[in-house]
Image 1 (cartoon, rainbow, N blue to C red):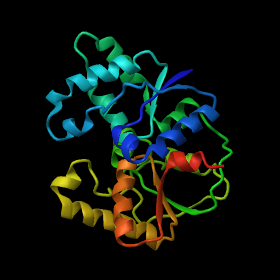
Image 2: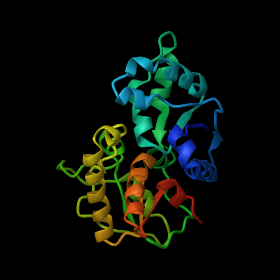
Image 3: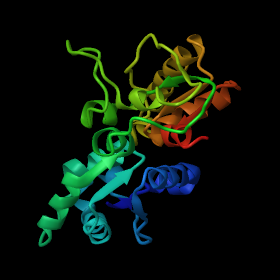
Length: 244
């Protein structure tokens, strides 16, 4: 299968190692991966701030670069959800529909499409999973605790394949970290308090690392951890799954 690798702009600028880990992991699992050089922001920040009408050029550019692939994969639940819900291009809607139906967040691609059952990864540490809201409530990569239904978590399913990794049990497994894109700018105090609560849950339960499938949330938590001079570190799930 031909896979188009979509690397969101904030990963490209601040966490390029996450993009590299995603590429290496997909190649290890047998995917023919391509990275369209002309890709840019998907338009999510503008849409989230009420300026969806300004994302037309982003939509056209994204469609130009990704319409020919069997699948599009990104290490970001929020950006994938934005494309799934909002990618429309006048005059080229067939291509946009193809992309909306074929784009996947990394953990759901590994579990649902590749159906990964074995990994060579090793990570001998205690790890807490941060379930990001877009991934959980939008893409349904894990169960919401308020629903009366059997629990599941695609990130957890993958992390349980990693040799030596111990998952810690959190008190509030699916609470928002407070990042929320531009919310952390407009409601800074609320955002920080929510982030501190999220960090405290992981620290209290003995996590050495916090992982997740959205670098945006992890970036928010990392900033709080650094200000607290905490030894706890954050890693995107791709970095752990790719670690040998």
